[in-house]
Length: 103
View 1 (tube, helix red, strand yellow):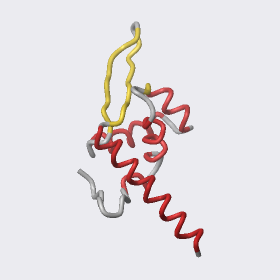
View 2 (view 1 turned 90 degrees about the vertical axis):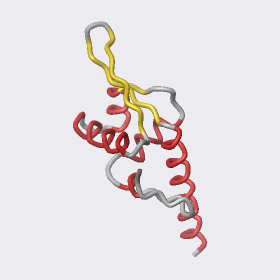
View 3 (view 1 turned 45 degrees about the horizontal axis):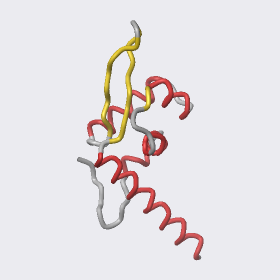
């Protein structure tokens, strides 16, 4: 697992590249295909591959491979721990923003 701090909610894995955006996109979906994720985030195939692998290794992302017709396809969804981590991180960001707005 990663360095998720339960007390704070901050998850550093979401602070590099499009990982936060990918998880936010997946938060409300059952499965999202690779091409949709890539297009919604506006990043390259290699960027989605790299960041999805990091999230998968952390236990936050489930990856399913298959095909539609003869075309290979890849789908993503958050794991339960991924859902908890993204919620915690978004809560932490909200508290951070509130603290900044209060000053």
